[in-house]
Length: 372
Image 1: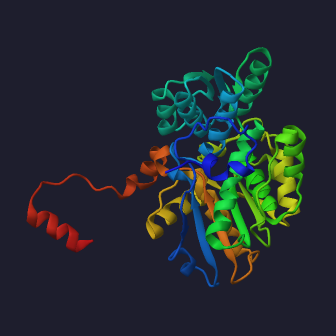
Image 2: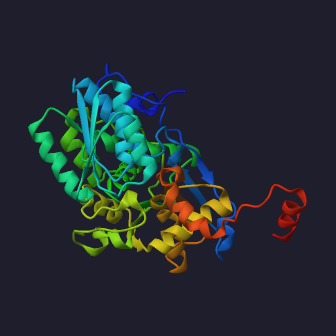
Image 3: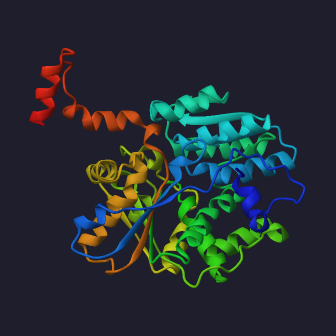
């Protein structure tokens, strides 16, 4: 099995002789949902791009394989990032794979246990700060100006180049782009990357492509034209961490969806342009709506994603209720991370349903099952 660099090298800005630092990322499943659409009085096709099946359990691996491969090509010896969790896990894994050191800055007490465990076991130097992600991000940028380390947050243009491949995979499976693409928005790089990929695949321009060309210059490579249309991009933020919707930075963002607990997205401008160019929109969801969607995906479809991922479905449900989605549409929701990234969130929700331990007796267990 190969990784996405081998599959998409022709449209990635890496030197021809660059060694691919890969963990066989990409090629994640596009799963059609069969039960959730039946809950609505409207006919539509619904798919989820399950990015939780990447090597470290999130979409970050798509960008990290390209960013770290480029860092190796540039003979860097260390990478650094600020993280709400998933970036640190991915950066640590790919740094370990390449033999580089990895430094991560995380908000103290704000990282889901599954993500923190990954970064630590993979050998990263984990620095907890008494602040939030946005403060950590500013520190990372300052450190990078003083030290020979590669920043692997989404401000690194190679990150978005890797992440754009997810939209190409969707087109390859469906035969064209969907009508709507629903996506969580935290640091806002992923919605920008998807839009870049869809734009390249149709041979159309976009602000995201212009920005990439400006930074990468002659190294920029575009995907081949394989689609006839681009989707409306629907970006969803948690109500307690919705700076794009509010129109200003949020100093103290709070949400149960820790992966998108960001108050000053680094790709803000590109994300807004992606939404506007696609005739899409942004919307906010409450924590209760996010957790309800997470349970719905698990109970109805058997798909376990972390809370931040579930906001793509939560937002779609709100938009269907508001009659903003056309009937007979083809819709894709990106699920950015696996549910095991944040098991505590799931356990806390379901603890009320957990039964007390009983004696290991056949009649007792049999009666209990028959009663349920």
